[in-house]
Image (tube, rainbow, N blue to C red; front, side, top):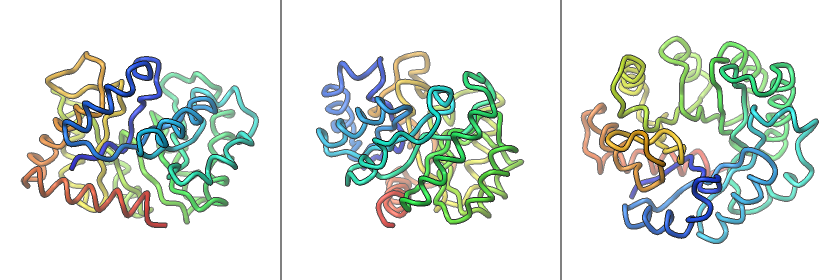
Length: 253
């Protein structure tokens, strides 16, 4: 059984064919998925799709969207009670695009971390070119369960992330060619088995050999295959590791 811990079938690219995307995923052996929210409407749709397809959802305000909000949406207090909603996210900091001012990103990040603490929910993090600021903030929230989506902290921050109890998720980039992916694979080999999850981040970041195409959960098999190769284990062994980690992080609270 494959698990996609981070997908956007509620995106513009995929929502119109959600039924087909889920069908193809199931046929490819993907039985569990988390549909991720990035703003209020996106989160509402994620929860709705999770109910429709018997999947899971997360709700959050992405750093790109932080400038549109002054606080955690009131609707989140209702959504978080939905049994299909299993995390707050994706939330964090993105200094690559800076689509929201950095001080606004930080303020919204802090508010959502406090919300997650109040609701005793795990957090899916989006941290891009902002690890130093993010880690300073996260050290003030030591009781949270943290998943670093599309982990990009390299070896530099890995020990600190692990000391905090964080998990790291890896997607299509694990299969790509190039120096950056070589370094990512080094991180993947070094990280303990109990701290990894796999994801597609679809419709983005399609794995090799499909890079450049619209990504979808069915393609996660390529990430599993490369991950198993890097860990020198079978795909079946990796499936068991990921399932245990997924259940422990998202389901058992």
